Length: 375
Image (cartoon, rainbow, N blue to C red; front, side, top):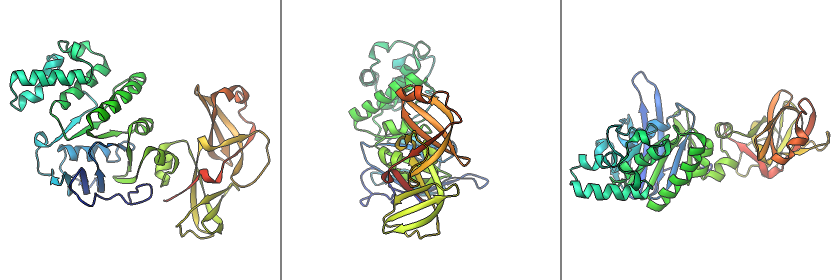
């Protein structure tokens, strides 16, 4: 079930302003379910990222909104009007694909003008509008160049200008940064987010990159196996994953799987097969002593205690498997009874951990940093 934090995501009560996906389902010939019963509301001016592994249904969802796939059932409403039977070029939505699909034989300006030309806009008006769009993305001085003379980032901005001239109500971005190198991706994240804020448009952005989603979104929709697992703001997704899948996919979460051995009010104590005991607040949960439970603890919340031995609760004695230096931080890959765990410490501590693979250390964390997971 989809979760807003931990609550079901449903269309807005008015069903008038913004985008509503209502029980949206796509089953391909042969019975493959690509999207199953998806409900989502997106406000105008909101930047929403659909995040998940390959094959989870996020791109198919975007393609149905853009009219490039026809839903098996359900509805797509934009400001209360159904888009399902509307042809793609007549929808107030425009898609920016991962591969920019610029015309190599046309100049930058001609590429941007193309959509307006197809809509019958006159030569002078489409030139004026296209130059304004190029100015918006900072490329007005390159209007006479051909795509082959542009960098990847410049080509991406031309693709954006080409869709912005059509004045869409919603901009759909399918892995828009996937073809760019790492440094260019980082720069384009800032440029794209600033452009969205400047325009005030609704952006729906598909990616499998967790860092990209966290850095850009107002809300993140985590998908897997054709359905939504959680919808929340980036901080909540990163620190309070609702399900095991979200916790594992977002990475750097230690998952302790065991049974409830104590319960006092809203506080549970879960113990795994290796004697690791973790306490967690679980208000509203009906979990009883003896029942299975899973708790996620973020690697960034884990503290390393040099002395072996210590408190048994919210703590574990580990063996260092690998010390991974990443500049501003160090990832300590650990094992507890064969179960992998992870801790993050500041980069300046690397000299004190370098070469210590095979040694024992103790890690600990606060109760507030544990998050009870749903299956």
